[in-house]
Image (cartoon, rainbow, N blue to C red; front, top):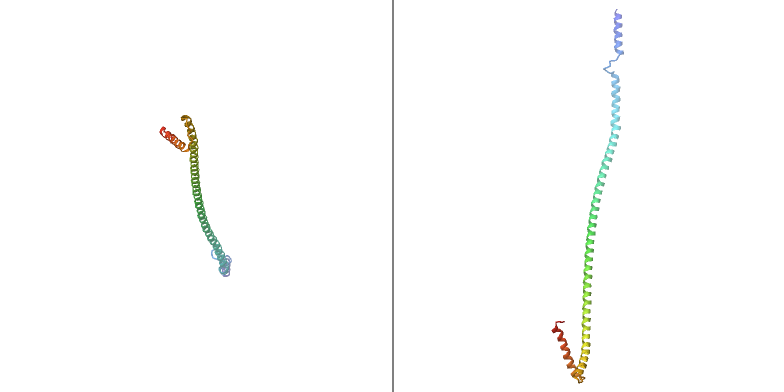
Length: 190
């Protein structure tokens, strides 16, 4: 019976050895898995992670560099815009100043032309007055001579004597003309 008991125990032991425990892994698998995991970690740490870090850093640098360049370009664009705005404002103020200068020049030219026109009209009026005065004096002289001759002739006919003598005639004519000059002043005419 021993043999049967022994055989049953051997069978039980073989049965227990043949069927692994589902909760506990086999120690050989743990060793192989640990070595494989260590090799995988070594390869990842030594080769893959540095490359990934370098690629990540390159990507970060590219993005940050792009952002920095974009900010720099934006700052340059803002500076250019402000400079153009200042230039535009300067040009606008220059244009306003030019318009005001042109208006002032035009006003000065207009005033100068008006002054010249006034001077010319005053000169023409003065010349006309001088001509009128000269013509009046000429007409008065001619009239005095004519009136004097007519007065002497008329007086000679009325008096019946000849008043041809120059001295007499001149005195008579001058006296007659003086009376004529005094007559309009008394009558109120100029």
